[in-house]
Every structure is written in structure tokens, then in C-alpha cells.
Length: 208
Image (cartoon, rainbow, N blue to C red; front, side, top):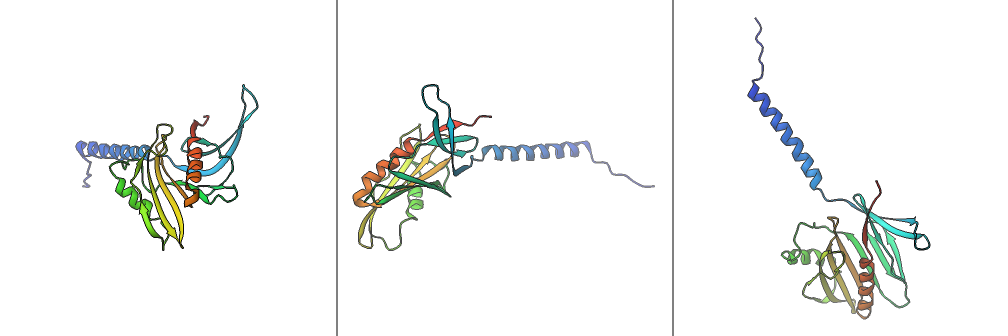
């Protein structure tokens, strides 16, 4: 006579609970994942009731658009990040915006050394007379962002240079890093362009 084994009712209940826990754990992890930022640049034209149509330049993060303006006297290019090059004759510098290798949950103020160590990786090999200033809190004080910035001065092949690296927690749950590189004589102008560029950013929800 064949015997048939039937799983006990408690065993079935335990299996169902385990499956539900696994499902909700996966869903929670997906919900907690930060939105992805893309630096592909798009343009669109919007109607304006107050005057001529408005052209918008933007990239995307999750379901939102990051709209921005390009400062006068700069050329924008994109790829893994955004790069601004001043076109003014004699102005030697560049501005980069990239995804941060760190995340917004790593507190800026209490982990300043960790951020500084990460930022220092980009210093050129062979740099001499390297000096790093004290970290600056909120160097980009826009849209309620939290940011942390570092400034290095150094010599490259005998030429005085300035490099700044700032980590910014955007209001959409993404951290970006803004890097400026310039000849020391042009540092103030290049930093002003970086401020103008980041200060122009605003979030626009995409139509559904």
C-alpha cells in the first residue's frame, strides 16, 4: 500500500510567510534604490503665455527633468557627465559634473575626511606644493541642497593650479560631484561660472 506524505498545515503557513517576506524585501530594496541620473542632454520648447516660446535644456534623473542654463561664454558637452569649457580668450579652466562614487546617505559633515580622501584621488601625478584648504560646507547653497567642498592648490610642471571638488546632495535623492580645474590666475572666474551653472538647475516633474 502506497503511503502519501502531505505537508503539515504549519509547514505550509511558514512557507507562505517566507515567500511574502522575500517578496516585500525585494520590493523594499527596489523602492530604496536611488534614482538613476543620466547626463544625456535634451532640448525642448515650451509655450509661454508671457512672451516667446522658451527653450529648455535638461537631463533626466528618475522620472524628473533637471533643467539648467549654460552660462554665457561657455560650451557644454556631455557623456558620462557634463563638461563646461569657457570660450573667453585667455580663460584657462574647465568644469565637470559627474555622478558621485559615494551616496547621499553618507553624511557630509561627519564624513568629511572620507569625502576628502575620495576627492584627492583626482590630483594629477607629479603635482608639487600641494595644499588643501579646510572643507567648506554648502559651497553650492541652492534649492535646499546640502554640499561639501574642497580646494587644492598645487603646481603642475611649475604652473600654479587650483582644483575644487564639491559633493552635492540634490533634492531628488542623488549625489553629484562638481569639479573645477583652472590656472590659479583664473580660479575665481572659473568658480563663478560653476556657481552660475549649478545655480541655474531646477527640477521639473515629467508629464505622465
